[in-house]
Structures are given as C-alpha cells and as structure tokens.
Image (cartoon, rainbow, N blue to C red; front, side):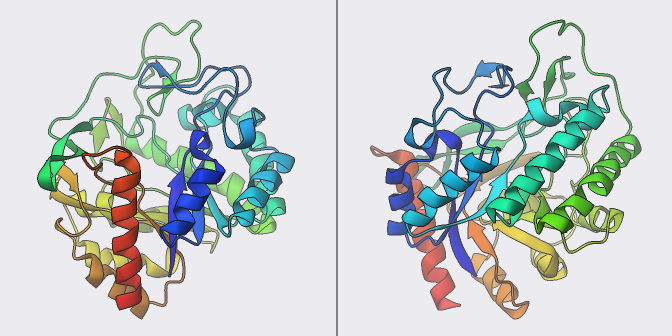
Length: 351
C-alpha cells in the first residue's frame, strides 16, 4: 500500500509537492475542476472559483487535460520525487449533458474519450469520478472534531430542486438558466451511467486507464430532489456488473461507506478490495443524515483493522486523506493534513 495526497489545481506548486514528500507521500491524486474550461465560468455552490488569469503549477493557464500539459505536470511531480496516480473528477462543463442526458451528450462522450486517451498516453493510470446530479451537498462545517477542530458534517438534507444550468453544485451555463432540471427516476439515472460506462470503458481498456467510481457523498437515496446511485455498499456491485472489466473499478471512500445506513465498512472493504482503484482514507462519527467527520483516530472506523483487511487482500494501491479536520493554528489545512498523513504512514508501517 502507498501513501498519497490529493491536491486541487491551484495547489499544484513545488512547495506543496515538497510538503507531500516531507509527510512521507510517494503519490499524488490531482483534481482539475477548479479552472475555466471552454469559456465557461465554472462555479461551486453559485460562487466563482478559480482565477481569470489562470493558475496552477508554474502559472500554467492551459487546460490540463491536454496531453502536453499532463506530461508537463507529471514531469514536475516526478521531479519532486512523487508519482501521479490519478486525476479525480471531470469538470461539470465537460460532461453535464452526459449526466443530464442532454442534446450534447454524444459530443461530450467523445471529448471524455479523448481525455482518457490523453491520460493513457501520459501514463496516468486512474481516473476518479462521481456519477451524480447533485454532487456533494447538504454538508456543513463546524467545530466537530476533537478539541474543536473544524471539519464537515451533516444534520439535514437539501431537497431544493437543481436550477437549470447547474449540475454537481457547479454552474456550467449562466444563460437561459430559468427553471429547474427535470425529474428523473433512479432507474433512468442508472441507465445513463450504463451508457457512460459502455462508451468509456472500452477506450479506457485500450488506453490502460482505470475508471474509479466514488460512492454518493453524503450517501442519501435522494438529495436536491434527485436520486442517488451508490448510497448503500451493495450498490457498488450493481455498478461493477454494469460493465464487468478490470478497468471498471471503485474510488473507495471509507468515510462515505461508514456513513451508509446498511452494511458494514469492514465487510465492504473485504468484498471490494480486488476492485479498488484508490482509497479515500478518512473517519467519521455517525451515519446519514447525522454524521461528523473527525480525526482518523477518534471516529467509528477502526482504521488499523481496515489496513489489516487490505493487507490480507493484497491491496497495493494508494491511500489519501481526501480531507481531514483543520487545526487551530496558522496553516490549518497543512497541520490537519500532516497529522493525517503521519497517522497513515505510521499505521502502514505498523501493519
């Protein structure tokens, strides 16, 4: 098993690469969603994210999905003594009609195929994604972790309909955005996912790239008046069976699995270990719709037990703390991440 760190585009700097190495990481998982794409002003929760001057490593303002940019990014990461294990999450501006079954679905599928081929040519082995209309929502932040450390949690569900021009809590279109997206059944959403996998998995197989699906976060059956797909552990099996392929795999989020109201996080880890691309290694207290994220050593999950199961199953992939409580000091994100990475590094050596 290998230790990794997740970084968003604006964090792709030599200082952060060095921080990862200093914490014992050997691998990175990179997000490319916080940037402008095809002239669309991508936002999260209706608020602008990004910088019109372009940002990212070395001031690069080019879309990082292009092969030369991926190769340049990988070169910078390798120069810091790290490996680029995965890209995590498509930009909603690139696949909203795939999620919504809209008129530009086929063109967007072809563009996603091109991205997957670029990942393969760049030698990036995994693409993480979350097939969801509402995305991550209904979460709140507060002093939920030990000592009043700030983390996220959930105490109520957001069932406001999703406005037109928005998906995954990000706006991809500011024009003609009146009204809300049409209601969809859960079965229809599964059909959209099956279409996506049947189109993309053959390309991923040729490119040598694994598609890794994140469970719903939070794992509720319905959010923002839309159905969810992977909100109980057994539903991961349904996803795998839609297109049985070693390139159809899981982005296994321990926190989301533990928050689910059915099943057992240890049984799920053992069941799916052979199908995991990489792991979000975080801990929680409680289950939906009432849970709080906490430090790795204070939650409901016995994280050492999880590592022992993964060792027994000969899992050799990367573990990252996708997020963790922030400490009450300067550089609160860095302090929280350093604590989490130190815990995981020691636990891996112990196991």
